[in-house]
Length: 545
Image (cartoon, rainbow, N blue to C red; front, side, top):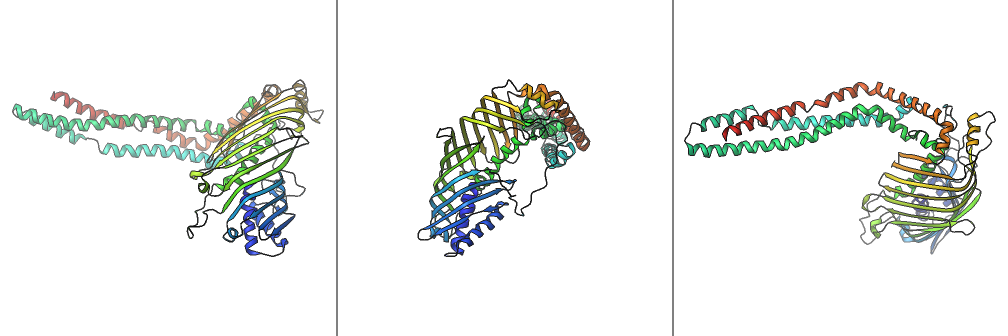
């Protein structure tokens, strides 16, 4: 969202002022829509553009930005985006404004026409043939093909680990005292025994000192071999467990690693993934791009070293939740592409609610100093009345929250690409139902009966991993209820999928992993060599005492 508002739409205003000063506003509208659509990869539309000069004021009315990932939804739409901008800065391709107004903002609204650049809908996703309502089990062959690069990277890492250890010890043993050195020490001691006492004592001291210096190497090398032996053991274990570990990783990626403990996640299906991915896409499309710092201009030291500098963005908007409007307003402060200029992070604060009740609180910090973007996002939503909220879009099992009072809290943090966060939801006075389930759908009818007495819904969502590959888990108090209905069938199918994955991994990578496991004794000969040479030197030292 903010990427377009801050770096896309407003940056295009600079082009407008420079290229079409005093031109007709329809030209500016065309440029924003044409260039904006190219950058977003989806349609950008503006109802009208107002441009005033001296001072320069620009307003976009009826802005909509389609979501490139979901063509029938908008990433955002806003009634008005307006700002007084610095004309001199615009001529230098810099956007400087004290305040930007963003009014009537809505996110992820539905569209009546596709938002793709060609106006066509992408082909529909293939339907799952799992036989379980709302549960999609990916085909193991397709999953392996998609994950091949990641699996091969693990294989290569194991191979590299073994190779590095072998190379290190080839070099270390070359510096060890060899048999020739030991023979030299023995010859020196033999010659000393033939000399008088004074010469023998002096010579023996020097010989012992020389041997002690060599023995010091063995102490260090013995410590090294213990460390490297532990690494060899770890690498061998990774090779032996690769089929099991990789199949578990892939099942976790698709949310299939929780069994009946994560049953609600299966019923919600893609809805959970979509919810998380929307947030991450919005982050990447906005603040993520802000972390891509550009070098400050050097040709004019007196100029501000930024391309973007906005002290405050005032926001007001609303979202429709359960048929009701949740209005909000707030601000984003200190927006710039060079946070080191102000030496402060971007901050966000929004407040809102329904019927003038304070129910929504959102706070965020986006810190891109020190070349790594660190973000913290917190949200709390209290006593929100919900009705008619669809939990599962499955035609076989359309689970719906007919009514309830919800308390929701969320905390997410991103450090570079590392993601960690959680969201907790509590719905009291809840009434769940399986809407319009077919009369002959035995599973749906059993579930509908099991949910009749549920009046409280508790959900716990955790997200870890990376921004590009989040690992999502969702648990709820319904899992045991749903597990009783679907658990046995689900476990059977998950077991089949996991076994098939392991079998395919063993077939594709088994021989290579077996060869790597044979390297578990690669340090044995080095360890024996160290022991023999150290023992020979110690024996000589003992003889000299």
